[in-house]
Image 1 (tube, protein in one colour):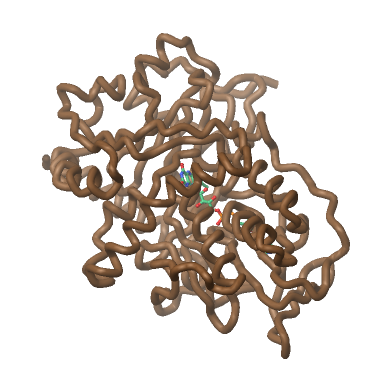
Image 2 (cartoon, helix red, strand yellow):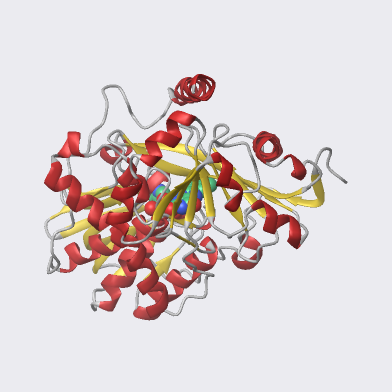
Length: 436
Ligand SMILES: Cc1cc2nc3c(=O)[nH]c(=O)nc-3n(C[C@H](O)[C@H](O)[C@H](O)COP(=O)(O)OP(=O)(O)OC[C@H]3O[C@@H](n4cnc5c(N)ncnc54)[C@H](O)[C@@H]3O)c2cc1C
């Protein structure tokens, strides 16, 4: 049956990325006992942690509730921001200048790190240093970006420069924005091919991957942990939790510290080459400066537009969210009005109350999470850092390690306030646009 609206006959509510690499079940072995480390969560964080631990000869198992990589790590936009978002934040007031500078330096280094890891493990995932164009939604946003270009160029060691509205068509075939900023030190990859490669590398190094097994509780024992799961118990000396936007009741302390926010993406059908070239002339990753942002790019083969944004809660039906994203896309690129959509999907990202990612230990339990929607490189890095800490702390301590991890009174992990916050942010975006 053909679907109404701008959808292809074979429209799917699963990620476009799964056409190349859908997360598949692994041969789940019996649940292990007496292992060194149980890693909870089989996304970039958990797999990166397991990979490094296994490389160091540590006996490690990844325990994943769904299929390995089923959630954000095979659903994201594949933009490798290399810590840019942090460079745009106002951290020094919270943390002091020295710690803020150390965090920035480490965050920027995540781009080199992920590139090295992809090369070392031979992961074919279309990784490319594409650069990024941040589109200013208002004149005020343009000025704010311009004030930071020198700092970003210095931090990233690559060019960062502004394009005024009269030149923005060098980067985006649209007059919708008020100019923007090009940053060279930024990249792109195919998220689920990367995920699959990371899982393969972890297994090759000796990690055990266990899917379809939700951890439901954790008991401290004399020499480690008993991890309760739906399929029985696992005993391990250490536990590392990498559940990010899917952190649930099994870890209530962590759940009170991350806010799951749904993010949505659509994919168009294949478009003529001259059109995609006009829309994104240099193939860079694109995002705008709104508080409720849009992020968009071409698919790795350059044939489709992928458009992402935060348009509702995760329960929203795929065609409904698709129509909302499409309306945004067509405001920027009216020539896509006839382009049909082949895929629409969503996943959860994790925000934190201080807008920083967190890596640490609480009551003996290790954790790494909270990337505010920028976790491709960062969560890979934090998983690696957690592994180094667990394996014996020979590394220089990460600047992210042990930061105070705030929560808010009455917050229990259910973000009832999100619709109101999103509406408020949208209103402020509109006011900014109109008033400058
Ligand atoms: C639509 C979308 C677009 C995005 N775009 C970008 C982008 O362009 N660039 C970027 O850098 N980042 C992006 N992100 C963010 C990025 O995908 C995440 O930061 C990253 O994938 C997080 O990896 P993770 O391993 O921490 O979490 P996840 O990949 O979400 O993995 C967590 C896993 O934990 C499992 N789990 C939860 N509870 C339990 C339990 N009790 N027992 C066992 N397993 C459990 C879940 O099933 C899940 O598989 C995007 C995210 C989304 C959703």
